[in-house]
Each structure stands twice: as C-alpha cells, then as structure tokens.
Image 1 (cartoon, one colour):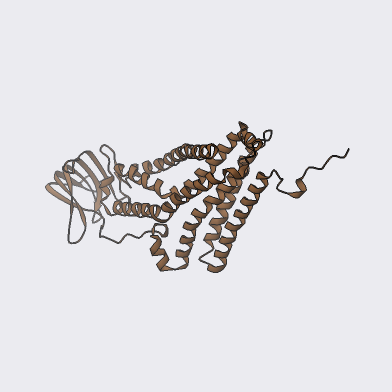
Image 2: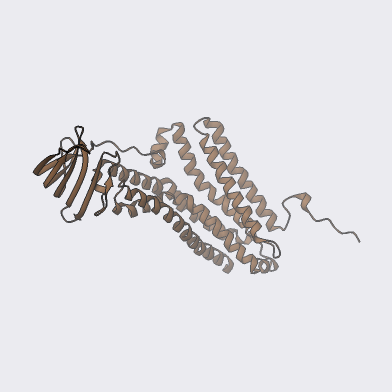
Length: 366
C-alpha cells in the first residue's frame, strides 16, 4: 500500500514539474510570435495574455499524455538507480504490484485528457477564433501603441499616436498618412476617436482640430486644409459570421454531421485518450532499468516508442477522409498493436525474461 501511494504521489508531483518545463518552452515560443504580431499592429498588446492562455488550453490534450509518460519514466528510473525496484523484487513484489496505482493514474489522466479533448480544447479554439475575428474586424488603429509608428496591414496608411486616454478611448496627438481618391496626404490632429455606423457597420476615425496637407512628393505646390472635424473611413468592417476550423467544433456537432473530415476529427479526439493508457504501460515496462545497464538507452527507446506511436496514429487519422472503413481499421490496428506490444513488454519485465527468445543467454556447460 505504501509503495502504491508513493508511486502515485511521485508521478503526480513529477508530472507537475514536467508540465511546468513544457509550458515554459511553449509560452516562450508563443509569446515571441504574439509580440511580433503586436509590433506589426495585427493584434493589440492587451490581448496577448488572453490568446496565450487559450492556446495553452487548446494544446493540453496533447501535452498531458506526454507529461505523464515522461513523469512515469523519470520516477521508475530513479527507483531503479536507487535499487528500490530491486528491493521490491527481493521482497516478492514485481512490477505487477504497481499496476493498481498505474490504473488509477490512467483513469485520472484519461478523464482529464478526455475533458480537454472533447470539450475544453474545442471551446478554447472557438474562443481564439472569435477573438481573432474580432481583431480583424476592428479598425487598423486599434493596434497602435503610443509613440510607435504603425503601418496598416494593406500598407496604404501610417498612423502615429502620442498618447491614448483609456478612460474615454480618445487618441491625442494623431499623425496619419494615406491616400484619398489617388491623392496622398498627411493629417495632423489634436485628438481623434472612433465612430461606428450602426446601420452599415462601418468604422470611422473622427479627427478634431487639425490640418491636412495634400500633394505629391517632389511637387512645390501643396494644398493645406484646416478643419475642426475630419472623418477617415476605415476598411469595410461589415459583420461576417465566424468560421471555426474542425478542431474547434463541438463533438456533438461533429457526430451529427458525419462527413469524412468530421469522422477524422472524432477519431483524432478519441485517439488522444486511447494513447494515454498504452504509453503508461510502455513507461511501466521501460522504466525498470537493470542496475548496471545504461538508463539513457531505456529513455531513448521510450522516446522512439512515443514518436513512432503518435505519428502512426496521426497518419492513420489523416487517411480517414480518403478511405473511411480501411483507415479506421488501420487506426484500430495501430492502437491494438502497440497495446499488445506494451503488454508483452510489461510481462517480460515482470518475469525477468528477454524480449526475444534468441536473446536468452546460453547455459555454460561444465
């Protein structure tokens, strides 16, 4: 009982540590991409952390099986190095004695992975899609940071704002360059604010108390216009429905649709749950290392098993839209093949037998 509780406790604690490391790598990579988009004015700076959190949630169903797989390998590898598994074997307790806590971990992990794969992950994808759609539908000047020149996505205008009043949403010290009816012009205004036409759904930038200079570069004649109010129409922002990718659809919607691509997405979501118990059985068999053997060989073998298994599952799911019945049969065969391999490996390690019959050591003759 003590060993079972110790295994479950250490695997869970190690899982949190592995998750923290994976999240740090993931967050650094994603933050750099979001900061680049924010610098280009594609997304506002205040939306970075929301998008980052939703991206992490969307990938949790892929990260969790790997996290528990690595955590099990690390715990059993440490037990092997400290001869705890050897003491267990001398006491008559083999690897089969650890099946109960491993089954408990599999049930807990499958419940969490299933909730993320079926419900939470698609919900996060839909939220990301809604936010990105909203950002694309908003005016180009939303992404402007005070004190930074920003070029619009179409490259037809440049904005500069000295400061932004967050209380009333007004811009102060506005510079704008663009073309209107083929004429290039520079506009300077003391303040500006956004205005939305409720009937047409178009967005306008209303500048107040400024001046507009019109003329072609190199010409000696310019046109100067002083104004109290000057309106710039932004790109067409008519409301359009949000289109989510398949991995953002609800599972019930995928099931009702029943198309080939929808069946592929359902198979992929179910496969992410089925991968976890197979990987945990492999970890239980590969985690036991002989006292004088190289533990890095076992870790390298475990990583090979993980990448081969997950890539074969991905390839089988990708074939479902082309040949539904045969591809699903291939997917089931991949899961069953690796499950049988994990069970055979665990049986060999539990009974101290080699994986291959020809690998048995020859008996010495007197």
